[in-house]
Amino acid sequence: MHIAEGFLPPAHAVGWTIAAAPFVVHGARAVVKEVRENPESTLLLGAAGAFTFVLSAIKLPSVTGSSSHPTGTGLGAVLFRPPVMALLGTVVLLFQALLLAHGGLTTLGANAFSMAVVGPWAGYGAYSLTRRLGGGLLGGVFAGMAVADLATYATTALQLAWAHPDAESGFLGAAVKFLGVFAVTQVPLAIGEGLLGVLLFRVLTVNARPELERLGVLTPSPDDDAPAVSRDKAPEGDR
Image (cartoon, rainbow, N blue to C red; front, top):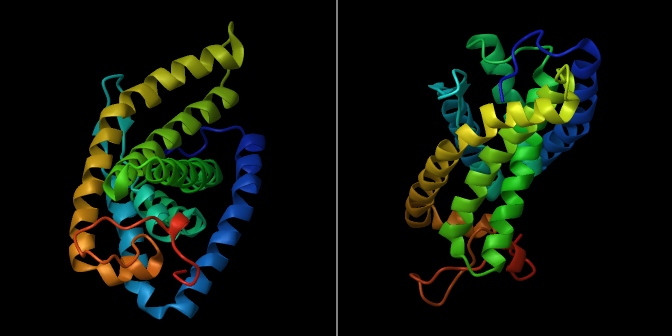
């Protein structure tokens, strides 16, 4: 999801920036509202941003000769919903471009759209669907974090295919090539990220259960060991 500086034509760079901007502005408002109404969320918001920064900064060689990264955006999407991650993910990408040379400033809009917009929304959708189908909290977290990872790379592949179509087969041919480079080789990382999310949420349910209940990820249960319903099924007033 780190498209390099100058790798997109100017029109594409501007277009993706315009496409991502409304989501980032909405995310900024969501973060301000969350901090204003629940100041105790500040620490967990910072932790979600730091988790995304650290995880997405890990650079692993790919079998195709490229490199792959986890994304970490699924965590914040589950905890605070996708709009918050639009801002946090963009800030993470900005710092990575400036400090680590991962991605670039001209490609920030495209990278933000794939990692901070599409990834969190796809992951949150997978999380919510899994919960509603009876997959439980941990099953939902695994699905959410894995899908957020895969959706990010699939979007990046399509962005690159649109910018650099194949000379003979055009966009479709380029899409197949880029998806083979990025999306397919990302599957093991996505699975690993999902498992990491499961481990992390097992810790959070023990050490931060009141905060998870306030956020609506868990709801109070008569049996402390029983899994609680998702925020989508939480009674009015939980959040």
